[in-house]
Image 1 (spheres, rainbow, N blue to C red):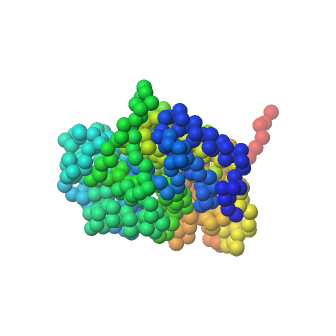
Image 2: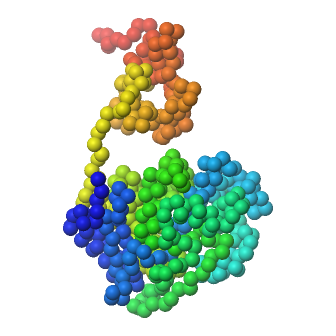
Image 3: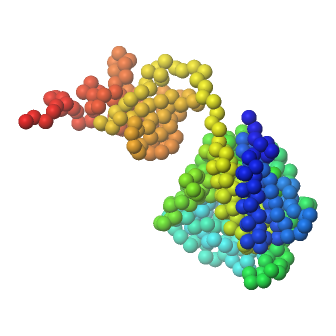
Length: 460
């Protein structure tokens, strides 16, 4: 079942148009283009322009700034999945001589390596990359702002290092690897390091007068992996669909899911914003959004998607500042998700179930706390507290008969079925916790034992 644009409710379409029209008008943007996607289909497009008859469309390129970082992160994770590196590897192992080689690949991906936010002057976004021909020119003399791994500190030079890492391991330029390993497989033919017509021009709008000034368009050189790319709403929707579901031609689903997990320490007072591996994570209006925002002189960009709502929004504009473009994209997701909630897929029985696994389902007790073990639709197990909040997790099978936690408190922990001599189940061992069929079952191996007097009432 798909949702072509003509099937969006008229009220939803008008609300979407009103939101971007307001953003373009109040933000005084020369032009703005947006699109929304559900179930892999574009369900709405809209644009506004200060020039009559010249509004951008889904094929018009804009510069997307730091959304480029997500592409670079995908390339690095491909190297990890191929066994060419580990995320815990120090950079020095694969890219020696940088002077910051002790930081890990994971820290660079999640902006917790403690590196500076920007390269040394002059302002790298408005000057040619040829001014910074070596990595030392990008990093400068003060390479460390914070101890690695201690806090999130956004770093553009950090992603320059990741781009150089890709080049070193692949033996090819970042741009060539990007094209062959992401853009071509996903059919993103309108995404490129340099602008290709039709494309928007970048403008600065005077803060106190309705006049504009053209912004320079520079090739960022070594800084390209941090913010070089140009793209379109059509291509970015394709990229978002990949980030939501994975694509074995580029990166498997488990790896893109890892990109969406918080990877850095949470800043005090900033509980609604996190960073994964090349992806920003935010909480807005009770929903979790994944994606990235971007800016370079003359351009602003935002891509947000909600996996739960199956809704993606892309917004691009050609102004240095003005519209709060991240808020606009989040609002487009909200409008569609609330006006036209996602229709669940039909429930279907499993194609089959292992009898031994089926016998494990049902209530289990950790001490006196009731939990429920269920089979999941993908053949795994899930344990959740019967009431209220508590420790729960999904599990996938290992080849040795144990199970490993995928999320929550028990992520990475081992679930093991402990059997009696006759093969019957005695208890479940989950990270050393004993789960029994009855609260403190005396027949099970309860640590500390069970009082011989058993359960009792209060004597008068």
